[in-house]
Length: 380
Image 1 (spheres, rainbow, N blue to C red):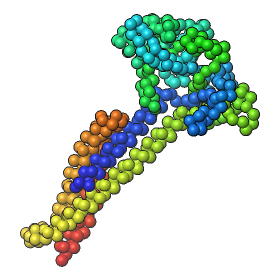
Image 2 (cartoon, rainbow, N blue to C red; image 1 turned 180 degrees about the vertical axis):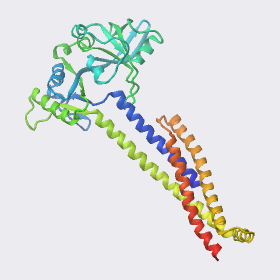
Image 3 (cartoon, rainbow, N blue to C red; image 1 turned 90 degrees about the horizontal axis):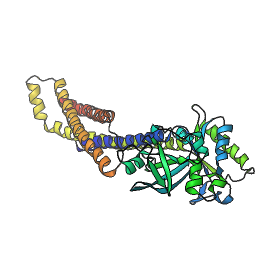
C-alpha cells in the first residue's frame, strides 16, 4: 500500500507543480501582451558581451516610426527609454523604474488605465511634465489616496500624475511590472536624462506589436530588412540590433513545462505500478495462507465466483485506501511546495481523479492476477 500512497501523492504533486508553471507562463504571456517583439540596439551576445553596441549605430524614434509605417504586419511600434530613479511625493520617497515612451507602448503591452488618461499629442511633443504610474508606485507614495493630479518629483523635476495603470503583476524574471512611472519620451530625454539624449533621439528599445493573424516570423524578417536598409548594413554584415520574439520564447517555456509535467507524472506513475505489484504479492501470500478459509466457505455453499470476487474486492479496497491517503498526502505536499518553496502550484480535480482512477485500475488489474492464483487453488 505504501507504493500506492507515494505514487498517488507524487502524481498529484507533480501535476500541480507542472500545471502551476504552465499557468504562470500563461499569466506572463497575458501580462506581456500578445504578438510582442522587442527590438534592441546591439547584435547578438557572446560570452555576456553584446556585439555591435560599439558601432555607434543605435535605435532611434525615427526607426520606430518607420517600422510602424513601412512594415504592414505591425500594429504599433513604441520607442522607449528606461532607468532607475528616486521618486518623491511630499515627505515620501520610493526608488522605481522611470520609462519614457508613448501611448503605443501601453497598446503594445495591452496595458489599460484604471483611471485617468493617456498622453495628449501636445504633451508627447512638448516634453510635458506629466506621468502615468503603476499600482506599486501609487501604493508606496499615496497609500489609499487617489494619485490623480498629485505632483511627484523625479530627479527634482515636478511631474503631475494624469493616469493610474492597471495591475500587471510580475514578469518572467520575477520583476514587479507595476513598479513603474511612465512619462512622455520627450520629457524623459529633455528633462530627466538630459545631456546629448535630446539631440540624438536614441532609444533603449522598440516594443513591436504584430497585427492579429499576421505571421510573427514574416514581421520579424521585414523589420530586419528595414533596419538593415536604414542602418546601411552591408550584405553579410553583422546586424547592429537584436530582435527578440518574446511571445515565442514564452510559448516555448509553456511547452517545456507541459513536457516536464508529463515526464514527472510518468515517473510517479511507476510508483503506482510498483505499489500494485506489492499489493499483489501480499494478496498472493494471503490466498496461500487462507486455503482452509477458502475450503470452509466452499463447504458451506460458496461458489468459486464468490471467492474470486472477495479477493478482487480486497485488492481494490487496499488500492483505494492507499489512493485516498495518497490524495491527502499529495494535497499537503502541494500546499507545502507553494507555501515554503514559493512556487506557483495548481491542484485540480482532474489530477485527483486521474491519480485515484489509476490506483483503482492498479487494484483491479493486480486483483485479476490474484484471482488467477485463487482459481488454481480452488481447482486443486
